[in-house]
Amino acid sequence: MKARVHVMLKNGVLDPQGEAVRHALGSLGFDGVNGVRQGKVVELDLTESDAAKAEAQVNDMCEKLLANTVIESYRVEMI
Image (cartoon, rainbow, N blue to C red):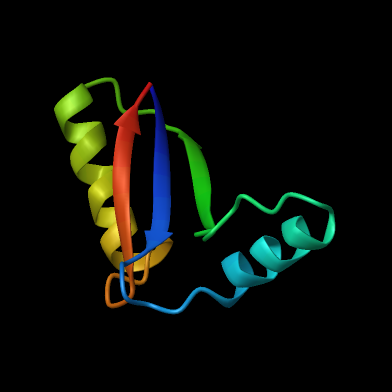
């Protein structure tokens, strides 16, 4: 079973990487971009075959390591 975890900074948290990308896009002539939020995607290949157990394990991984839940939110997608 596979899982995909999407991690993004929470609203209200400054995103310097996103701002750098927005600035670079403007420098390249893409003037219509008002804001950029940058995140990460983590794909996991799991040995667990029970979908509910696998999703619970992935949520536990996110809470303990994959996301800093103080400033980041995450979404788990079982694929």
